[in-house]
Image 1 (spheres, rainbow, N blue to C red):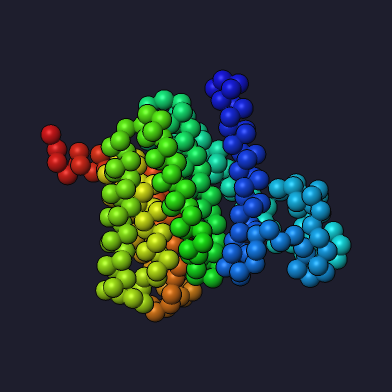
Image 2 (cartoon, one colour):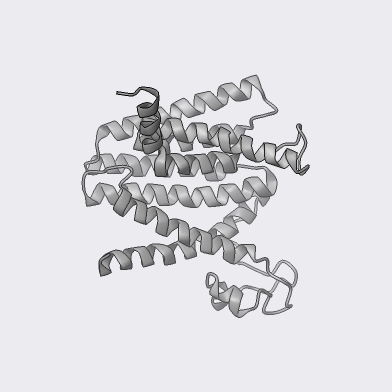
Length: 275
């Protein structure tokens, strides 16, 4: 591994830490209707959060997980989200550099495709938080993310990426959106409007990579959600009619498809249709 690659991965990790700090704010404020531009304050004593108190992970450790003014405990979730986002950004960057799940025909389109998947990684973190907290996938997050990812993919095409990738991404978004919309019509109490909107974004990100990624990522969402639901029922943490957030499993399934969907689909075809 060259020094340049190490620098790129380190930069991605630090950038992810900063983005993770912002995602904590988005996950709390967007569902509550609080402007993102409002100054950060302690929810108990209203003391403003100073810049040095807002350094990802390090500030929480330095303050020993408490407000600097009133010593109210600060949830460990904040540094955990920051750290997880940093790790996710390193993983996505490494995948783009070494695994090349979505060939982009050169460094310029490759950088744009990487930016699209980093955006999707950030959206995955914040949407998982809002769905677990409030069973909500805010359109104020999903729709701008879909526009941003499509804009980056389109720019990658203008920069030299294969047009087939862009067309497949558009088709993937439409296909998953229609499937989830039909499921919502059939079972309104089992599928929310946020899930339908998120399906379009997920389909675009999977479709850019390939049909195998789209099929595996789409199926993995239901497989993961079903396994977790059955496990919760088995340990009596949920009943058969308990509403379980599905967004996190859609996103987890999407990343299964992004990371290994093409390989899984190829292995399945080789097994099902031996030469």
